[in-house]
Image (cartoon, rainbow, N blue to C red; front, side, top):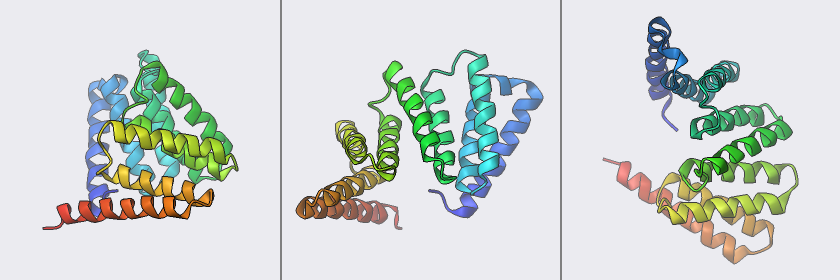
Length: 198
């Protein structure tokens, strides 16, 4: 995630973008919905969950109105709404929304992409939280395979997914498998940090 000062600067930029879009009428377009979606994500990162949800709800209304709801953008909006519910402790509500988000991605053939894999990984975590270990593990392994297939294992997403797989292995008593994936997660993180360092 971005640093706090970076998030605030980005939020200022998107606040201005929403203001301009409202003044010239483009808020009611796909671009307007996307601006609201990103502003909602920034609010969520800042911990302003009610403001985040307001932006996601407005994004949903716009995308539905312009017949662009059952798309990758609609799926992303649903996933963000689910993350707010998860943070608020409504795991059942989060699962319900994420299943709808997954259905959108299946319909638009975008489940096997980066955002689809992130969705599956998050669903896996939530299913494990509610005690559905096997279903949770399946989704996490599906995400792992997608990140491998699209060659994103060397990214922060790849590191996070390796860590999640390691935890699944540990839960099943496979300590060697867990160590292998935990080690890989650390190696990826260290490599990313080396690249970012001056």
